[in-house]
Figure 1 (cartoon, one colour):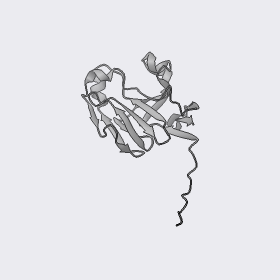
Figure 2 (tube, rainbow, N blue to C red):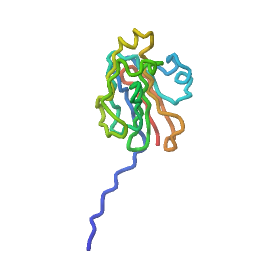
Figure 3 (cartoon, one colour):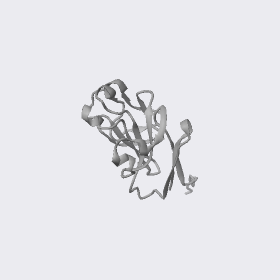
Figure 4 (spheres, rainbow, N blue to C red):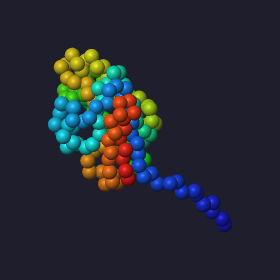
Length: 161
């Protein structure tokens, strides 16, 4: 009996993560929340959105979505890299008002797939900022390094594995 040998795929050594929102990319230091601005949560950038649509920056799995407040989601790439996207600051206080989920925990998503729609007017009327941090959380074992490149619409996060 003969077995067909499977071709091995080359191991992923780095992952480039582009912005999951249209808008102006800024340094995390501009986020009006110390947990994000001082890097306590992880490294990345923030986006001042111009439209209320958050899409997946890569194909992967939804590992956690805030189902009640609908304001944040964590995705995991097949390489094990995770990314947290947190729409606005203190938006948990809206209790889901102005947010519409298009995903659920455990769901497989493709790059560019719509994850969450949000009404920027509802957020602003509540007196809350819409700035959205996009971070690679601290403490991921498989991550050897994170580089954040801020170049306008060509900004990205490179994660070395």
